[in-house]
Image (cartoon, rainbow, N blue to C red; front, top):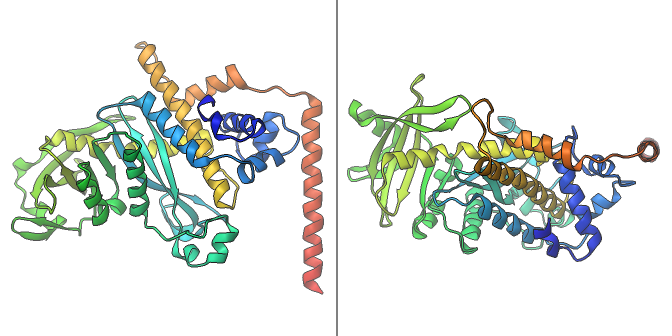
Length: 412
């Protein structure tokens, strides 16, 4: 918390931000301003709500602090940047960015808010270092709606690959070096993003659809047609990295492509050894690299799913109950900071105290349990708990009265 102290204009919001981060790391079954304020010993949720809505502090500067913290402690010369989006299911139409859209969280089209994240993934660990909220055209085309949600007058529509490019360039412009970027078909199918990475000399392994056309010396072909021409000897069994049940072995093949920028352009194909299912990746590298390197980068994409799972399950990333854009940026940035702490402690513990043969290494889940149980679990007296009970019931009474009044007015 000392790293971000200078981002706050007053001491009160700085201290409250620390309590909010601890609340995000707590074992509360549901994390929002109400539950965290009660857990932290405050008399009402107003202070936490003020921190997210009106207090003076720079969430983007804190985001930069989180990035520096992650890179400093998880630094790896072979690290990969992973871009991906995740959705939070929402009700109503007032939460910033919400509309009916596809989200992988539900696996279907739902009323949801979607954000794109940039994850730094290295051998020591992985954590999110940037975030951008996806604003559909239904929002950017309605200035009044954007203004009500706290968006600036310059709010403009940007595709998910454009948001990914913004975050990658922000990472590189901050003076950090990374050799590779990976992502799913949303990003691999965008030529503008691929060209931007090529011009900066950044290698990539980006998934593409089976119907994607790729350029070869013999002309353009669909990816799924090229694979049919491969001889059996072209396939190699290579691990895409360790999973929960051991190495993830697949059959892999690579085909040379042509490209507008200098460097090596290739199509990487993955085949499931059990089902025969195929997946395709557009690849670029400034210099020739072996197949095992491309496979390692492709396998890094699973790290983003682990990051989302941990940030949502342990740090409350998706449990915010806020509607306006400034509140959203503040909540998710502090959730990223909370998760970064777990990732850094895990990496340091693995480096300094390797687990014995009869113990699995410490996980983020176990570190959270120990941290809360041994270090920060607050203890409040009965009067404090009864005070919160009174406050909740008073608030519910006001809400009920207001509801009845609106109902009566609508019936007259």
